[in-house]
Image 1 (tube, rainbow over the protein chains, first blue to last red):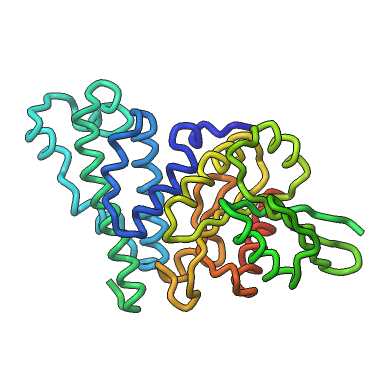
Image 2 (image 1 turned 90 degrees about the vertical axis):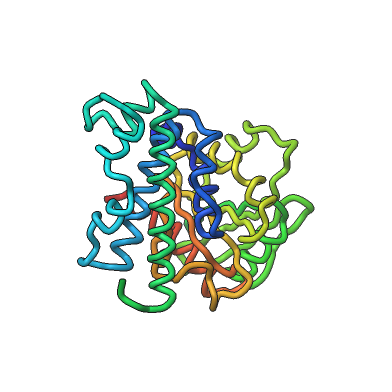
Length: 131
Length: 162
């Protein structure tokens, strides 16, 4: 059985991502060597890990807004890019196909925010402190 | 007695040998590319652990034949050794894509009392990489950590029964 999501963003790339994440290196640099489908899958994987780490660290107090509030809001990002598309198009799965450079720029920002958030959760757990 | 077989794979044979010694107490058979240890759970069930050094010359069909009977695979690399990580990556992908059997990738650390991230993020279930693959940290020379890795692999097998 071949899992489609594994092909999009190989297990070894996921491993590589965790290696960089836990060694404190920049994650967004990995994006440049991935194709569009893998970039979208990387973003999904990072979001899943952020939520997992958030729930382990914060329990029922975890709120996705504590991650998303550090990201540039979509209307602001679209204005910066002079984009006239509808707001719901502005996500990895759609724009990565029609305007990959713009989508990659946005995904890089999001991925770095998620990495920073995961490192905060790790730091808080190491300090044994609530967020 | 029923026998379950597990492959422990790494860039060199040192890590599988250390892991098997932690579980089984001793190495039964060893040659330059493989080693073998046996762990009897009880008089009904035994585990055979095969340590394998990655040979860049070996073809994928070798693994296709050798791996069909395995319960699962444990890949080991030393956490600060990028070369070791690179060497296991092609095989991890090959196994993850071709087989449904569980894969555990272990980052071997020098001191289990100071893991790179707090234990609660990777114990007891590891960090999911894919439906059949998990990542975890452990000091493979410590029997307690090696056993946790083996238990994780067996739990992944049992989860497939759900």
